[in-house]
View 1: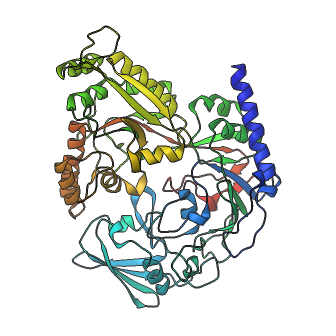
View 2 (view 1 turned 135 degrees about the horizontal axis):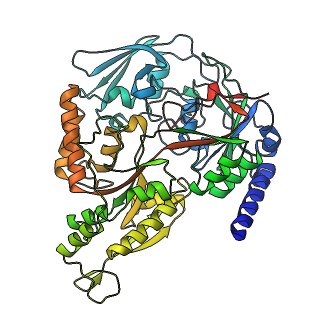
View 3 (view 1 turned 120 degrees about the vertical axis):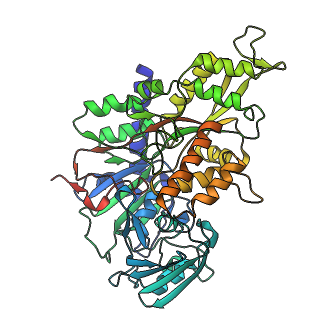
Length: 536
């Protein structure tokens, strides 16, 4: 305990030194607004009445924040760039840069009537030419139905034409990328991205790559102005440092995950409080479909039966999560108790399934073997983004041992972790999370399970599932669409290509000096930034 306390003190000291020194990095300007030194002023500004400091854990470099590709924290996209239509509470599609829209009878043409009072943060006007200009950078094949044409009808009217009539089109236009609208000045003459210039309520004043970004209000923003004048977004990858920064007041709010063991610290502090919301995200295990062990359905089912998910919720999350059944939680459209029944905890059933496939502990060492080969698997994880993953994986290791499976834990830095998923598939099992909000269910399912010709699915390929995923996006009737999603979720549930774990609630821990802290409709935006005020 004393060692842990010492580590917390050291972590806090390092974080404060980082705030004060800026780590000696050179300062880069992200917009036309100048090259103020962010790092050297951060500590003093944090306590000013018009500035707040927010912590994140992912990549943080506006130089890579093209509206087309995702290479930095999603909150930056939401704060700077705006879409034609916005994803609202409960999934309702709301006006944004488009005041209203019409859809053709065949469902392939969307006509958007644009606002006439909008400017980009560089002072240039937003109009139909802005949409056409942004569309030149879009990948036409990135939507469920390929985008075939973008046409200017007049200065404030544009028409987008898609190849097929697919129900998710409007939903996909709300995504943080790639369909956000950026100024022509965001790109150089060779179409290379150079700067984040959008119509959103915030703009990048300055930044130090992979350390911090300083956001200030867009002076041309057409809606209500924010109450605060500066947001310092800092990258803090260490869980303990995040807690200590909140305790010391060096940071005001954490968008990044915090370890469950910090709950008592937060609860006992009169300077900290928590905003909790139900999430549309779930944690699960991806199984390497190239591993012959997992090509045996009995093994996949056995691991599902061997997990006490209620224990994960109680002992790791302190009850602030829901034990998983299907891969997606019931907060996601089309998920029901009937199509996502999941698996109950039964170690006897799990052992029976392994034995049925020939896995027996013949030498009495506690590990089952088949044809003389012990059942040993590598489980990969990272804890920079999700502090609970280390504890979850340690539990999985213990649960698997009771089943007779040897699990070797391998913690990686965030870059190597994502390389394992998207590039080299260097894992037997890897913990991952579903997507959130507007990406669920169709976007997440297609991203993980769909396999186009010449490609390999990220998570698992099943020809019947592939067909269902193609069919469901073209169904316009809501009842028929629910029926197809029932087939999709039941297939995933029965076939068991993944191991669902839990659905954690989303928590934002913040300093009580902040008022009006409210969750945004999407976790990608995080907080309704324009509402936040600071107690006097």
